[in-house]
Length: 260
Ligand code: SAM
Image 1 (cartoon, rainbow, N blue to C red):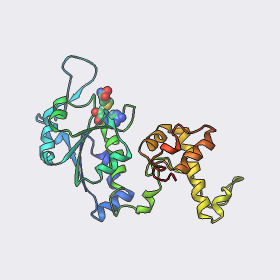
Image 2: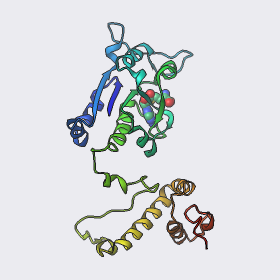
Image 3: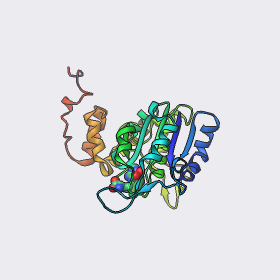
Image 4: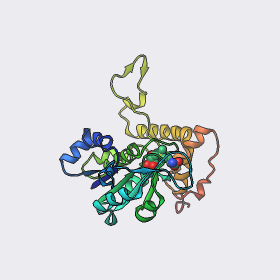
């Protein structure tokens, strides 16, 4: 997989590509990257890359021509092009999985008030937001996306690590503990020391459900909708909340066909 990052500040993503697991993936040639400085494609001697927006308003906008030339230089017309923007669709683990299957990705990092709409119309396949807040530039957003995508590529980290983490099963991850058994008077839950695999799995599912209900009830609704929530999970939800599930177990996708 190759990442092309078009930016006015290549030093920001460079630190990421040159560090830790990403640096190893680059060394192993699983990942390649290309940091393209948009300023190198400016026309005038001052290397101007921004101007005020038509119709007035605060701030400056990135000029279309330098960006257009930068996109041509990486042959973006043959690749999937992403513009990171707070007005895009939300970035999710599902989208990260989808993008990890591409051979090359081009990221446009905005600055100032963003980029000229005609660049979006002519070049961009996906406008993507990393959250409902506004950053001062796109480099951090593109790096967040690249981080979530590249670790899903085979050979970067073990597939076991990916299997049980947050969102992989539609729920948030369960709490985890390591040595020592007692830390500042706080004990590791007994069940995790029992060696009883089935009980550990039950405890973990129950903790996952409790955490997801507290922080992200929308994920529970989505897991129900897609049939990812087992009957065991539905029963646990009833115990945790003290409420009967909104889904009748008999209508649950996992239940169908199991009636006598
Ligand atoms: N005027 C824009 C708006 O209101 O939607 C905000 C521009 S922001 C100050 C500058 C750049 O930061 C954007 O062009 C974009 O590339 C990046 N950016 C800011 N917040 C982001 C977010 N939540 N997700 C992705 N990119 C973001």
